[in-house]
Image (spheres, rainbow, N blue to C red):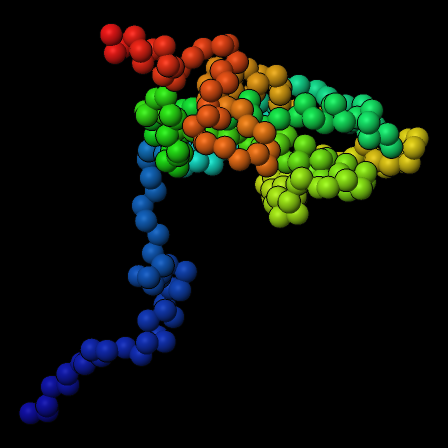
Length: 281
């Protein structure tokens, strides 16, 4: 009996033959497309993205406006204050609100020392010596200072601008004594100290006012140019309100406590002989 022929089917096909029958209908698993989304779901996703975009743009516009119009200027940290055109100073709260011209010459200049001496001699640092209470000192984070003799809760401080005036008068005196050839009552060390203090203050303020050159007589820079300044009279008023009743003649020795007995309004804060006698009765 003849053996029955068996038909065999290949278990495994050549990899290249898998795509030969109908290459257009066969897609590898790795690139098979997902079933299409429902149109409503696509619309919801697009709408949500647009809403988030609109909110983001709105928030950014608001923040930009707030920074420009609402955000307050930087506040002081420790004993350092921010000196800008819209920011106040540490103690008196002054701002650059006063337009003043730059003058190449004033009544303080000239070759005649006798004519300008009275003006320079009126520059005094004494009114800038103030007595500040402990609460204020803590709030402003100021260093601890010498105690005001008539109120131990207060410390004694000299306002920077008035120290500058003191130095200007000291340097004028040094120049005058030298120019006139008379004995100089200002020590060279004091004069150099004042020069250095003014130098430090100039660097600290770093005034960047662009002074125009040319087109002015005499030749120079900035003549008549206007810049925004702080009101010196406002500083004088604040200093007077916090006066330490200080008065002292430069280079004249004497007890420190006696320098705090010149209140501008005539007040007597210190014990007098009459008051002591009254308490003894």
